[in-house]
Length: 94
Image: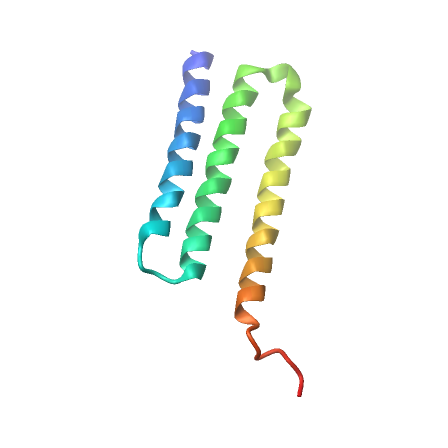
């Protein structure tokens, strides 16, 4: 039963990875594309790591640290990208 749940989480994670790339083909703004990709990538990666946590529970400290790091790093990177793309000259002082 644990193996089935583990493989299901890994499969869901891979699905999120591919699902996040679909907006890249659309005609929306770059920020929308980056946001969709980063959210789907974060959720997919966390689902895969959770599946690995079920598969190899003896490595729980490292895998929990990985999940926390993914959540923090991808959130901060999203804010940095949004800030950098929105400061195209309006934040410069004269």
